[in-house]
Length: 188
Image (cartoon, rainbow, N blue to C red):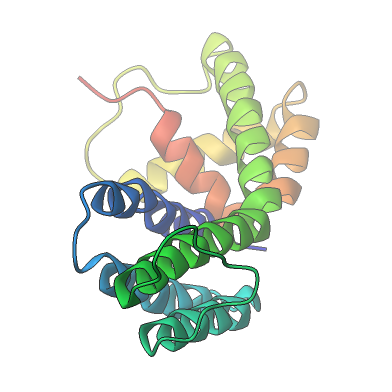
C-alpha cells in the first residue's frame, strides 16, 4: 500500500511519457537514450517504494540495451530496410509502452483508493463545515495542530464518526491529514 506522496511521485514519472513520445515523433536521435534514462529513474522510484514491478522494468531496460547492440527483440518486424536506428527506436517505443502499462497496472489499486478517499474527504468536510467544526478564521500559526484538532473534532462528531473511521481505514492517518490539508479552505 503506497502513501499519497509515493503514488504522486510515480504518477509524475508517468506524466513524462508524452514528452518521450514527442521526441519519437520529432525523430530525436537520442530518443532511445532518453527512454533508457526514464527506465532507470522508474526502476529507482519503484525500488524506493518497494514495488516488485521494478524487476520487470529492469528487464525491459535490458531489452533496450540489447536492441542498441543490434539484437531485434522477439515479435518485432520491419517492413523496409532494417537499420540500427530503426531497431533501437522501435524497441525503445515498445519498451516504453510496456513499462507504462506495467507501472500503471501496479499503482491502479492505490490510485483508485486515493480517488475514493478524496471523494469521501470532500463529503466529510462539507458536513463538518456545515456543522461548524472548521474554524472560520484559522490562525496561520501551528498549522499541524490545527489539522489535528479539526480531524479530532470530526472523529468525535456522532454524525461523522463512522465516515472518518472508514476514511482512516482506507488511507491511513498520515494520508488523511494530507488530503484534509489540501481540501480545507485556505485562510484569507
